[in-house]
Amino acid sequence: MGLGNHAEKNRIVNHNKQLNKLDISEEGTPIHLRGYGWVTVFKFTAKNGRIDYIVTNKDNPTLEYVKSIMDARWSVEVYHREVKQNCGVERCQARTSRAQRNHIFLAISAWFEQHKRRISEKNNPLSTKLGRNQKCYY
Image 1 (cartoon, rainbow, N blue to C red):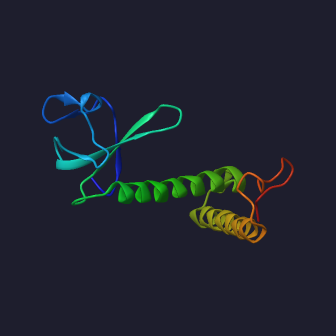
Image 2: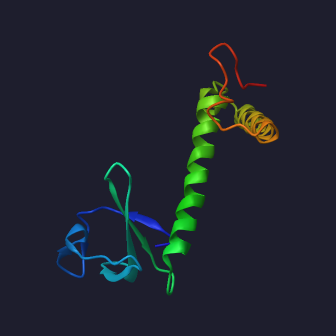
């Protein structure tokens, strides 16, 4: 199961109930997932009303622990989005594995340089996004 995984609201838990029909406390609620055993589920409600269910098999997880894991996962998602959108890692047209590795390395290096500049200038990611004519390539 891992440190914190997303569960769908219609997931069947406790042998016969849907996850969204359960009363889930803020401290987490132990549930039984077929194929995994006993896990703890947390319910998060976003500002737009979307409800996320996060499941973990860690012993005695706290809400703060689960939030820290989710924040770390989100930062990884932001990194991947920035590398793909700003540095063009998916635009590689190379055929050989060596050229593909070089392209990925240089795209990540360009992201790193952009990130260092953002930190030194104390800017957020949107203010340092490259313009249409600029590329983050090597």
